Image (cartoon, rainbow, N blue to C red):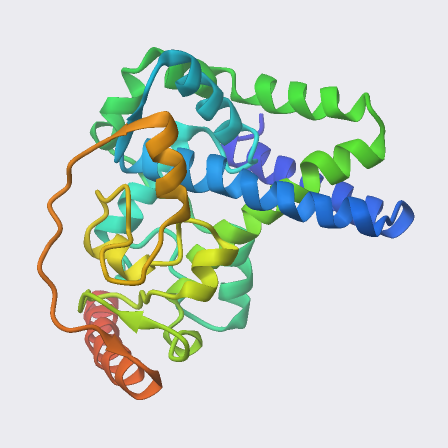
Length: 295
């Protein structure tokens, strides 16, 4: 019998294969641009606002149950797993970001990074208490229990309208979401790729940075350093000139929490400053990894 993780990998493969097939045999520039716009919105709502800021970090509560169910449904059809399973692994990631027990650290050679990009990482043992707030919620439990039926049912429903509709209105946008999550898994945690066009608000002991470029491409997620330092923020734009697109959406459909914004040193911005700080962080983390391997 296939494990839940294997089933999710099959669903992700179906997203990629369907998209590639349509792009090769049913190429349409206007539909492709439309699919990218849908993908951007899909990530904003299902990726950032639902899976990340709602399910994993509970930074807000939906204004009513109807909105809540719609959000959980959209999070379910991203092919990233149920809200419960995704939140569980993400919460562990935050506890050990870039450190030895990080469940999806891209630390290693290009092959490790490639596998991490496609979420082929070892599944951690999860203490049920870490997601008790979700497992005791009847709506999250329903979509967890019926995850396979919901995903396959929606995929087949879209397929009824033809390969073009399936690909351009669902699988390519879903690929955008998967790519955004892969960015947060690999690129955002690879220091050598983050020296330019970025800044650090907090001197967190991981490789995270803030970037307006990624903040636009992956709406709501670009201020990764701020998020890792204060994960309970529903709005990661805490400095002058910053903007959090998913926070605008959350304000429309949810009741945000009232997080305490930690004090931070002056912002370090620019290639030299960011590189120096990340190299210092890397020395500390590598020493921790070395000690863990020897013990």
